[in-house]
Amino acid sequence: MLSVEGEDDAVTISFLSGSIVAAESRARRLDNRLGNLLLRAGYVTQEQLDHVLAIQKQTQQRMGLLLVRERLVEPQELREALRVQISRIVYAAFRWPDGRFHFTQEGTVDYDADHMAPVSTDTVVMEAAQIVDEWPILEQKVGSLSSVFRRAPGVENLNVVTGQQNPPEGTLSVSRPEAETWRWTDGRRSV
Image (cartoon, rainbow, N blue to C red):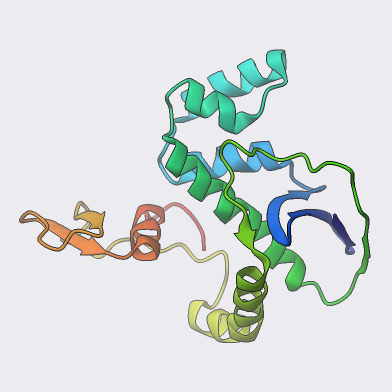
């Protein structure tokens, strides 16, 4: 386990055989952030999330297990959401100007082995380095992280899909990051 403490947060990253299998932020619990990530991405409604949170409070079971068991998300959607969540927590720590860290070796690593595919540490480090390098450019282009983007008039209801070579008329085939960006561009959410 790698623990990193910064001015406003502390992050714990768990490794198994050299790959990242879990990351937690003291400032924000992973389960709540996972639920909010799925909510914002449109995989669950607020009512569904509240229902699962109530079950979790009673049973103390993992959020991912409950979401799959309740058939609210598919296992592959959960795996991707967990990967994104872990990456965001780790990337945020890379942007800290300073902090303290220490490694510990644990006998067991607590993570959702049924729904979490280990993430290559090399990949995360390379992507984090790229994000840190490109962040000033992003800030220049976006202006403010509180900016709110909306879809252009006439294409507000465009249907996007990922990975289709010949999508039906009125549908645009895009990459996975483009599809996620499209879902989040709604005229309400900030950058």
